[in-house]
Length: 62
Image (cartoon, rainbow, N blue to C red; front, side):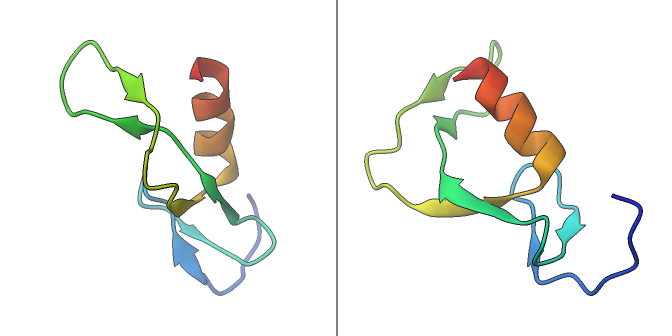
């Protein structure tokens, strides 16, 4: 995001380190590792950390 900050988390999708300001923690769908990609509802309701670009990409496909 063009900033030089310490990372407080790692995005579960792309592995990018994210600072406190840009970390998004919310319940996300679970995807299986096959193709085509299928998103399924997370029945455990676990909150996961995402970076902003991956969060936007997932929101488009929910």
